[in-house]
Amino acid sequence: MNIYSQKQRWKLFLAALALLIVVGSLWYTNILVKKIASDEREKVQLWAGAIQNKATLVSYTSELFEKIATDERKKIEIWAEASKRLITSENNNDISFYLEIISGNSTIPVIVVDENNNIVNHRNFDEEKVKDPNYLKTELELIKKINPPIDLDIKISRNHVLKQKLYYKDSKIFSELKEVLDDLIQSFISEIVINSAAVPVIYTDSTQTNIIEYGNLDNELFTDSLYLLQVIEEMRLQNNPIAVNIDKNTVNYIFYKDSYLLTQLKYYPYFQFGIIGLFLIIAYYLFSTSRKVEQNQVWVGMAKETAHQLGTPLSSLMAWVEYLKLKNIDENTIMELSKDINRLETITERFSKIGSIPKLENENVIEVLNQTLEYLKVRISKNIEVELKSESANLLAKLNPSLFSWVLENLIKNAVDAMKGDGKITVTVTDQSQFVYIDIADTGTGIPRSKHKTIFEPGYTTKQRGWGLGLSLVKRIIENYHSGKIFVKQSDAMGTTFRIVLNK
Image 1 (cartoon, helix red, strand yellow):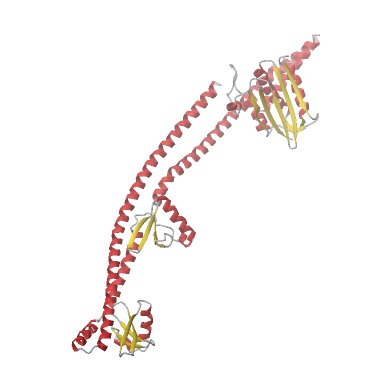
Image 2 (image 1 turned 180 degrees about the vertical axis):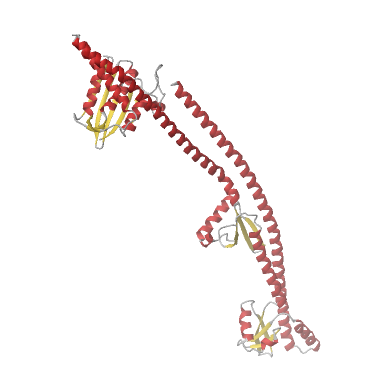
């Protein structure tokens, strides 16, 4: 008991030490992860701040272009009004002023159409292209989609009003500047992705569902819209999105999450401990197997040597019995000596079979139990009642009678010790189709639940002078030699029940 308890204490100490190392490593790794995550988020925030400043510049440029567009429309409206006044004015000074206004428009392309949508006038178009009769018509259709027309109603007389419409498009300078703005916005979006400091980012519009750009993410997976929404939601749970004001009417959002390196660092300790744990399990298994093989070799060697050592005095005793028979010694004495010699022969046979593959045959379990119990009844306390219960008198199972009797003897002797020489032992046999259940129940003090498995370990004993080999031997014989099972079915203050399962 003391040897086994010391082994258990050492195991618990080593397990506690290993747990302490694991917890300490996880704690330290967690601190590192938090520091790196904090530093990473700080860099993202700084980067996002710089992006916001650039977005402000883009927004200011956009507002400037809106003002230019508004100014150009005002100029066209003034130009249209001057065109009307020029036709109806009779004052020479006014005519000169209106002509100066009209001639001042040298950049904004203009097309004037009558009420039948026929082109009656145009200005600031490429003269070479205008020679093509379809050029102005094509340009007119394009211009209609860009800006709303300006009504150009000219009153010719009291009863006659000439209804015309004036269409215009952005000037060449304005168009070139707008292309520059578009390039600026596109480079701004690209910079969001390129300068995201290895952090996975998604740049969306105001709806937070339509993706404009993304970076540091798998391109192939982005063909799945459902996957995109899942990624955005994952990023939203990790960090609040950063709003980027492109202009006064447009607000886009930057979503980001921890970098792949940081994610790896988070799970690396678990992976590392998993590998170490797997290595330790394999090493423990190999060590345990090696130790068991070594124990078996020692066990078999001791058993063989014991059988060998018993053989010589046993042969001598048998010869002495024959000699005593010739000397007319009391027959009862010779009979008892013969019984003990037969018993020694049985023990020698059992030890000799340890380590070899026993021959299992279909034996009558009830008959083997009766023989063993009859032998034990006269050798245990008379205050102990032994009862065998079975629904059938002939129940076959694959076993070796000699070794199986050894199992029963060990279990019943342990039961006798547990009851301190006073109580009842009940052996119940149950037929379960492919198996035979044998329950050995006593009325002893019981076994603590925590010891139900350890009692079968070599070295475990509650006796002052015990070796702790009895139940270990029982387990070996049942499981290794008979391919069966043995376990504690039930144990409490009222007694203990061991169950043996044999194959039929």
